[in-house]
Picture 1 (cartoon, rainbow, N blue to C red):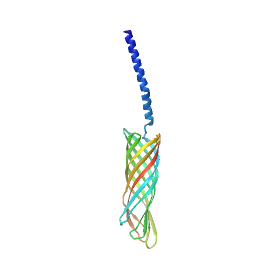
Picture 2: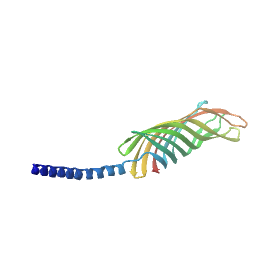
Picture 3: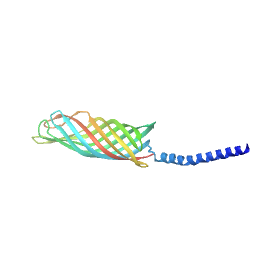
Picture 4: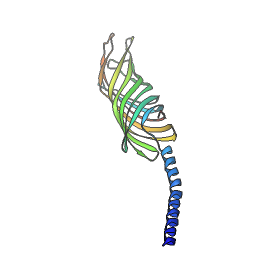
Length: 222
């Protein structure tokens, strides 16, 4: 009986030792995985740049289109909600687009955009080291209209167009606090009338829209 108890005690000790031996590397692996797992929640800031395809419809038969580079910065904050990441992001982008057209009364004209910006919501799902997300929100762009009349004289006016932006993107960590992103965005601005004071006193309607594909680098402050 004593021998059986001693055998059972030795067996229990051996099982406990084996379990501890197995749990140590498993625990270390889990800790390492937690350390390496992307942390998508918290504040962040970064830079982005890409290509813009712009289209402008008018009420006088002229349609304009062109391709240009854009670049700017973004800031935001992410919240974790189970397996979903929700966030709010704002950005400002420098645009140097100039599209030429023929005004109603003849002569020459150009439609130029300088700055644009957005305030967007984001909803994403982590997939391994990446975050796949959809985004949508408010967008604005600052435009300048220049016209030179047939009989001489040049006129200029500035206007802010308001609209919506929506799109898809993917982001992935490459360093513990640094991620790279790629996103495609569609900008649809509301049509608006621009007037030019001068000899012709022209009032013309412009309806701009843009498609942007851009890449970015983001620094996470978590």
